[in-house]
Length: 169
Image (cartoon, rainbow, N blue to C red):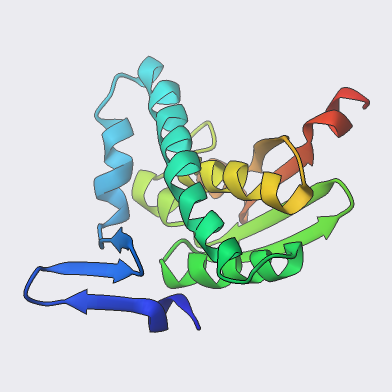
């Protein structure tokens, strides 16, 4: 069942839920302008806080998907791709090769909400991939946004690798 099919709106409470998980709609610029409201030298810390928050809380969602039956890496990736798009997080494509996961995101709402930048801005996606990549690759990972549309690239590209694979490189 897709995310949209699982999403329940309670009009009397003004809430949306996917099972026990609550969701809300918010414009990307409302989220991303939090960073823009900060002095430029503090923005990296804001982005890292966003990534850590999504790692923790988005990771709970991914764990729920895994417990609901998306137990192998391909199934979990399919759920993540579908759900991310239905949440408005852009179109995700994934490539899983041995100890590496590559995710390409077109139409990132975080780029749209932030605007042009000298540095990558898709910290929420980075946080989600930090959570998911360990489940997919079977161990601690390192995740980087290696390309960001906010810096002029055609799309945002993330790479996750097993931490052990990085140490031996």
